[in-house]
Image (cartoon, rainbow over all chains, first blue to last red; front, side, top):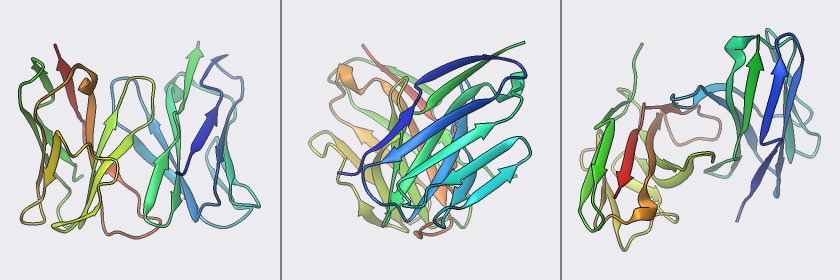
Length: 109
Length: 115
């Protein structure tokens, strides 16, 4: 079945440092979604990427979808303590959305 | 802002007992999902409904789990009998329609502990 892998599992940064999480799929995806889950909370939709090579920005967050539509990345510039949480990618193939295991981000002030 | 409602928020049950969770999606959302999330893992899809019909239940352990959405609105997920390994967060999500690219709105979840 479809597998979606994320690295790293965990990252601890100082406030102001950059952060990147990577997502890789075993199969070509039709699109990829990114979610953020705060500690004790539920996943919240951030963005969706559809086109090969697509890049989208949301303030300090930059999302990329690979040319082969099998990988994606989320980059946060100058992290803030409010960025703390687990970031999940979710790859869609046909009607099935498969979540990765997530990258937990800790930010120290 | 409309939200997905779930109850109960927490449930403690003994193994071999029956347990049920309820979900009320955002009004007008035709697609409803039940996920199981183990601590430190991503959500794992259990069942997906389009209106009252099951679209995907390939990952649902059907010997003990059942799900229904009789009127195509709210939904119930049942486990009978519960096992220790069922301890997890059970998340419900909804989206406008079953289509590629629809964002999912998650409820607060039900934290199940089986003792």
